[in-house]
Length: 269
Image 1 (cartoon, rainbow, N blue to C red):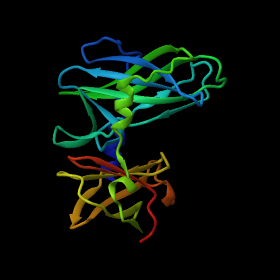
Image 2: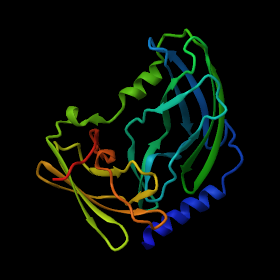
Image 3: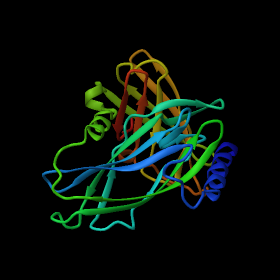
Image 4: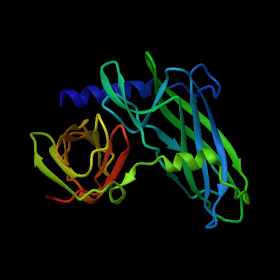
């Protein structure tokens, strides 16, 4: 448990040091909302766009042992009932001897917005907490607002490219079998995932997530035995409580040099 406590301490300490707001044109990044387009079903596709200055990086939804996961608040928006985030495939980044998971140079993060009333425009008003790193790591709070006009139907090629840069599904990647073996530890659970799939390229890393945000998952040790990828990790409740795992809520993302694969659900083997 020493490792989990240390990482949680870093995250809490970082969040406690958050500035009130980041400059939208700073020495670290430029942040903006791409207005996007309205789909035939009435939903609006927009995007958060970050342009990072040379050497700076930001984190994926599951950032690894030393990262800060992004947090989104859209409570100031008008005519908005739901926001779905579509994550482009991230990269494995070596940072001060620790592997983190995220993006370099730039990030276009598609947002699919469901309006309360389809006939009216959406006014998007958000607060986004992100971590950015170079020689040091800096948590930042971005405050962004943008009116999204109804009736714009021409897709933005930048958002289209980001949507296409998603991990392959299990079917697309040729996953033949996936199974998870779960066993108890003194204060948590050990999980061993076995995934039969073609190689995704050098440096494969499996990232395992649960549907419960109160469960901390260590970075998995990933190896291969021919056509089978094996990932082993440990899971703990952040408050030290007992917990169970919903297998259908497990998500395994395999990151390789050639491409990424996202697998939803992990039955017993």
